[in-house]
Length: 344
Image 1 (tube, one colour):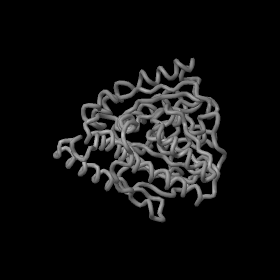
Image 2: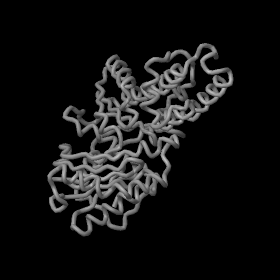
Image 3: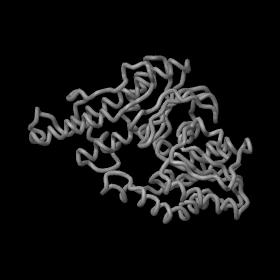
Image 4: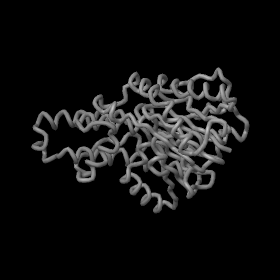
């Protein structure tokens, strides 16, 4: 079964073709990083306009790279949420139009489910059940994954996502966008113990997250640091701030994922989402997991960031159940994974 997957949930226009679930034939991504970099974050109106310009050539390239045409496709999977409304509408309306005119079944996909299942795109992946932590610019959530389509939310951010915190701190430091890779680069030469930033809920029994307080603490420190003359202030360098901030985020993410794995009695953990590209986070988590008796699995970076392949994969599991969408389906900015069974 060949699935065309389309994702326009935020600022990447992506389309991919998979065969029989996890075999990726093509995966095309058009990034908008250069467009949004001057603003220090994604501008929704600009993002949706850029999707309009790129959706047709990106889908065409995904098909041509796979050596296929639309009549060869068995189902079209498209992200309907969560995400930016304007961006989501571009992908959904285009998917609806080509599905209708080519008489191809339409499958609606939850973007978060795509991240949860993205590890299945890898040849080496865990058996079910496993515990997954999805960490990105818009989401930070823990799930007990029993099977495709069967997920239990164990914890989530109560305010800001971890990836959003990276972007905000990078902007405060004048480093640009996206913040994750930039902070990681500067943190390599910094001292992670130079500044003690708060780790919200790390001693709490709950598996929820909070990063708004950390963002505020870093902002206040940077304000004081700049008023004192930057590197003259207590011998603190920009790289030290980056490293100390990153360390605080990682401490919480790793601790919560390990505790979630223990609570759900699994042997396998999965880290997915854009923040999962961070090599330092992977190295630290792998070491801690080994000590605790877990095996950790990571999608390759191309499958951690937003991509059409994970949407096609998620769509495959719905398509084999003939769980197709009606043409009156609409997008939604907020879309908890628990509501995926309501997709029609």
